[in-house]
Image 1 (cartoon, rainbow, N blue to C red):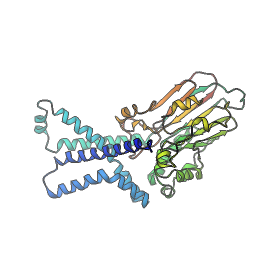
Image 2 (cartoon, rainbow, N blue to C red):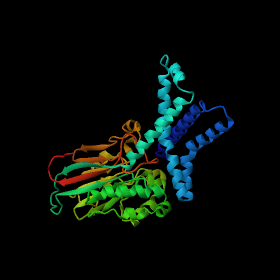
Image 3 (cartoon, rainbow, N blue to C red):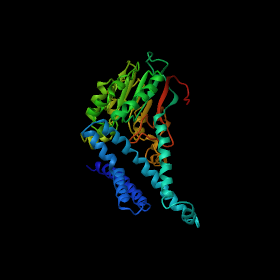
Image 4 (cartoon, rainbow, N blue to C red):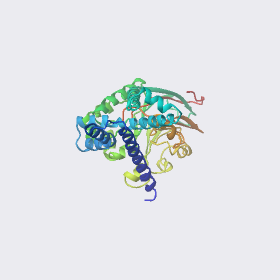
Length: 390
């Protein structure tokens, strides 16, 4: 139980912070609303919908799946980045007004509500640009090499590996997002597809109704399509999510190692949410998972969160692929994320171990990315002694 308390507290802090930011922005907007009972009543209703709409819409979607619920989730999710940028804008404007004459200049050229309206328009433009960023699935290319394993002559000279995490497929709109991601993956003609967690973000019955199953089944690679679970699969039911993915052609590895083609090991790790939202037991140590595998074979590890990189390197992993961080998804949250993980985004090498953390092919919550686009990684994994190139 002692290990669960910090996680519960952190989640509670995030929720409390979100609500406080929302209430602050709504109260600051109240100042410029005309003193009309009707207008102020409408404003309070809109404020309540903004602050509490997203969690309410998600619950509606889970309990009574429908296209209306999908639309409610989509529209209400836009408040999440909006409240962040409204807060930053209000704070910046308040600091600017500390300079002599700034307040008088504002009063001379703008009506009482002018600065707040201008901020709302600016945030709306940012959201529009962010939606365009999120729809774009960029392909990041890496060329990596490992020493050829002794005694294994059947390995090909190289493998083309597609890595896509954090798809967050949810509801009807998830089918369109998944179609773009699958198209990007298949465009690189991969030998192997790796999906390190947070693939789905809705109960299995919602996914079945939305028709995303055939899209998942259209993913193909000669060496297979493999996934591990992320924290969001646990939020919506890990066993059901894994069964849905397996039924649609994706091999879900849950603290399990498989040998592919007789010459490559792939491990998928359980997410740490297993302790809080699963059976309460910690995930198995990587050394235990690998105990019965052939140590001569190259090793690829899928781990949703980039928080156990030293363990993977110590186990002799040749490649570790992670997601989870989204690289913040909204600027400037990326600077906060960079303080939480040893590698929040990108590529790093620890000894013989290549580590890749992707910001994700989809988005959590709103279909918006500020300061970045969605992405997949296309890795050429060479079994030779050549140096690494990017």
